[in-house]
Image (cartoon, rainbow, N blue to C red):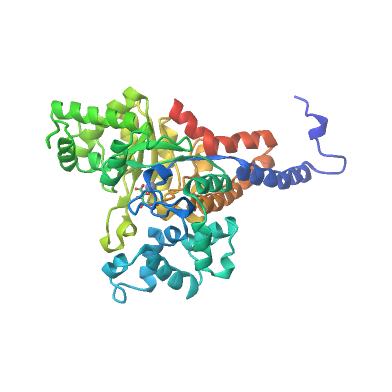
Length: 452
Ligand code: FIX
Ligand code: ZN
């Protein structure tokens, strides 16, 4: 077929020169496309103000147990930074209990002093605070914690959500609604409209159900379901009823579970309680409702409980079990993220085998530039555009800003390189094609997988 003359190299120029010019303008197109594309954040621990907030801001009325975390003290006391501060002020100098007895403000002062003032904030979580302050229009170089506090105190929680979503270009925030968390559960029961904020989407999270069925069955029994430690037919029916009711209450767009590295699934008749709950309760209900299950696999819970949420570790998980779930339940759809770097390649290969498996995000200890670069590169090479490159896992509202800024830059760099390689191979992606692909990666794949 004849080549359009506009696409041909000019007289004297080689096609390599033309490809080179294309590649440099392409890199700018890719960066612009990734910068501009609104993202649907697949997994966060964020909430709207209806769930209460410990920081009232200009709105008044703080709720100390509130679930919506925002503001500079919350940013500084993020559990990633708690773990880091105990490296430089170890428990032999400040006991864990003494740290936890401090007010949030005192904890933030301690972290600011030791991780930002007495040494440079080089770690990814520290740099995140710096990026966030700067993008909010504050001046991190002033090192003026009191000034930042004054600025946050003048904001309202609701207005801050809009501002942060705009700065981070996040179009939707997916919550993690933990049904076995008494604080959260009470809020859903007291106010059926607590989650009715169109900026947020609900997700039913039920780790205990799969990780420890006997304990979960006791909670279900307390709540009026006829569930017993043995997974009898009656118990299965009641557990299904429980799931259906909570999926409806939350308006869940998917369900989610975190699984430890030792999680194994053999077959639908696997007698292990976790496998049996998945096979008999969770997957049938999700198939019936047309909802996917998100599996987050590899966190070793509470390796050091003194650190609170920062005390979890990582272990190598079993990707073959994920494959067996995908093969054994073709009518179900699975999102999956794994915490160990060493599991990433095998997870990509599993995704090549199973169209009902959608890998997502660079989770937690993988949410660092060098690893995001490596994992994103590998996923593009093995899966093209058919994955969800990142989620924020933000626990504090303003973290959306840095998590997405940092990730967008890395994703854009990998894509620019890959489109460049493609151009040199003889396929020049147009601006529209680049934007289409970026839309898939940052929002479309999620929307389509949910809608399937
Ligand atoms: O299980 C999870 O959803 C984890 O992401 C969190 O519990 C973890 O503490 C976290 O915040 C990681 O980023
Ligand atoms: Zn999370």
